[in-house]
Length: 453
Image (cartoon, rainbow, N blue to C red; front, side, top):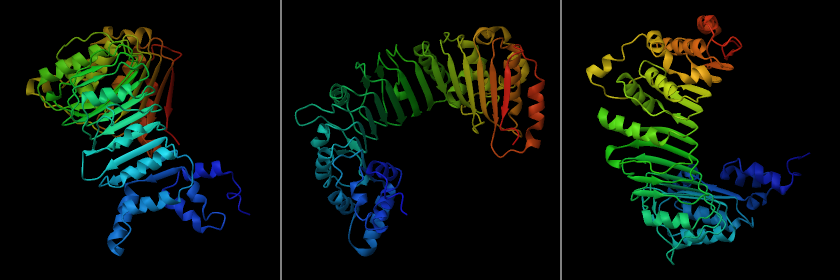
């Protein structure tokens, strides 16, 4: 008895949404019941893998290129509304106009379009009139305004623009023509100098910079979440303006310069803008710049951070930066350290600066004992993941754990996860050390998860 065939169409469509389109089409050979079922799917995803396979077959048999393959599927599609319509690896826009008409007729909600090897195609004007689109992603193209000088995406909530030409004027038109926009991602977008977001609906901004991204001014007074990643350069002049409502900042980027003054000024100015943010997530590069500032005695303004997430190796290059953040975050309640494998020095230091990092880890932390107000009054939860029993940098992590347990007066729970596939014998010594550490708060619970299976 075929129980799957008796499922409602909505359930079958949901199953289709998790399958590659090729597998969805192959269901037509299962039985008469399934012969045309695939044509009703509202999920049409022509991704890079499909495009490459179709083009490989086309070269072998001399027919059916990728665009004609897409056309053949669209002609058979009977779904009155599309949840998802993605087209990747498009190398010309000759077929795009009828596809956009198809997308608008079928009220597409999630539309993605990316070109292959031919960047900065001018997008058809009809793209700027997709009245049903909720999520839109375009890449390797050039954005402009519609035929009447405006853009109209009345239902758009999520917009991602990657590797594209985009001016301040066009960005302004996008924001004014998308009254419901909540999330904006700009990745390697050339031509933008200022990002001015006055709309109260936009809550998330993602900026990914590599080489050409040159943003001199960011004004977004109603923004709640900011994520900055990629590689930035001194000439990018990346500066934050009014982000007064921000509650979450994710800093996953690096800055391509060895000039200590440029690094220090950049990070100092950045954290001045983040002083009121409640959740801060930073990577190992940023942490090492903070380590450099800590070792050179640079003072930062205090942060109101309550949740701190650190992606770091916890080596000699990271420990001072962690101390810096603990000292600056006087209201800190939750600390999460995700150990990474990048334990090497990411900055180029002169000999004098590098000598400062030759310290005893326990002496270093105890020498700053009186500066950690968060440990005395606020820090309640600590989670550390990725502990390695045989790592040479383990001593720095253990010194940090010992210090936190010995100084945190209101600690409720500390969770420590070992890396997967480690034997109990490897972690036994670590387990014994941690359990022997004195605790300032006797009721503090220490859970060693993944240590013993």
